[in-house]
Image (cartoon, rainbow, N blue to C red; front, side):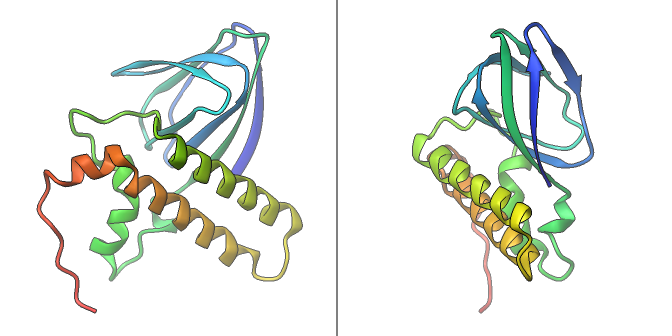
Amino acid sequence: MTKEDRLPKKARKRHYHAFLEIMWVTSGRAIVETDIKQYDASEGNLFLFTGYEYHDLFVTSETLDFEVISFAPRFVWSVGNDRLDYLFLEPFFDRRENFENQIYDVSTANEVTRLMKEIKGELEKKQPKFELAVKAKLLNILLYLVRRPQQLESATERKSYNFRP
């Protein structure tokens, strides 16, 4: 689910995958490119990529260190809870005109990176039922992403959902 990686200067890594990805740049600089936009990435930046979305990293510093959480949508989206679970994944799939792969809201990025560190700790310690803690922390990350100002502005354009208790 999580991994650390290091790429050398001028390394280029164009790829896609079948899962969703949250990437946190922990040190260095790079150009992050999708089919739609190019970003200057540096320490502390956070990016979202959906499955089958080509993205490219071109390292512009001596090295680039980053951490990634990747997961299949089915880890979150369960049968019978379709509409509610979809809301957790909306930041990956809602591709309106104002969509950005980069998370610009600093408070959101701080909370997400804090939770990414906690997930890493859970995976390293492997305490009993650590899988539940990992999923709970991932759902918290997704909640922060759903509630970030950019996502909420986009949500006002959509119809509201009606949920029954």
